[in-house]
Image (cartoon, rainbow, N blue to C red):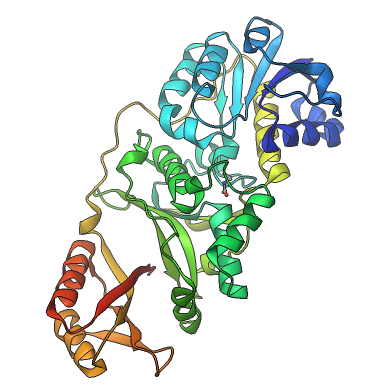
Length: 412
Ligand code: HSE
């Protein structure tokens, strides 16, 4: 019998209990053991839920119980999660978590503690919700050098951008909807400002390089600057806009970033809509491989956590080892990376604006949505990001355009 304790009875925690109770026979047969949820830790009471019988408000009940084999941390945040997880591992209990904040901030340290104590620290649900991606990188794609990672890693923003694009809705309305569906973080700034995707790409890049990627080093932009008008241009291009998290490991100048990005139709990521996430990896032997599925939501995320519980039970007393050392992976200056952008400008004199753009950018493809308004957009050629920023500054200063209204990266 494997005894488990679940820390947190929120969306994912209640999902973990539901997944185990719904699929118990199947899960136990795969784990080759019976599973007993012995405790659920939460500060709240749940009088109308059978969980009340196994509810505790005190973590000490769990840490002091030698019969607990696996602790499931689904509280979120790093305080007190870090302390609870560290103590659990030190006490010889494996930990399964969906907490990307915790993994991105302390993954290297917690994995080392797990190794010292011959237990496992597993975090399949921390990236891509229900999509298997951590185990495939750790256990399957081991013959390849990973050259590129491109991912739609945040379900909330993908849901919002899809709805904005399909239904012409405003930002505020779609955010409320995503919150009601249980996709968004408690503080949705983590989603819309790109912090959640930033932590997830830091985790994937750490696993791909085997070194610690500090998420603070990853240039991150969210979707708060993306409006209805930008989306109209993207639709006219026959493309989609996604909050894209990418990392390039193909040269020594490794870089990573999170930014709203226009993705052309031929890229398979362009058709990843709603709450779905996808991760496109490129290996030097394998070529491209794509992982696709629900990136957020109660049962999809809980299913990934439960897959870790099965893994922990099957490997009792055996540390599986993860290629993620404490050595820091330095990232290159993003200004050196080559990009292409869609730039929206307003003008007083259209011809003067176009001449100014051509003289600065050499070539540009113009897109006009409405001949009667005072704006258009243009697509730049590929150039260093630093040089593109300088040119946009010069364009505004030259007075040939009134204002640069927005500039959005275009993938490829
Ligand atoms: N808020 C996150 C998302 C939840 O929308 O992707 C899953 O990590």
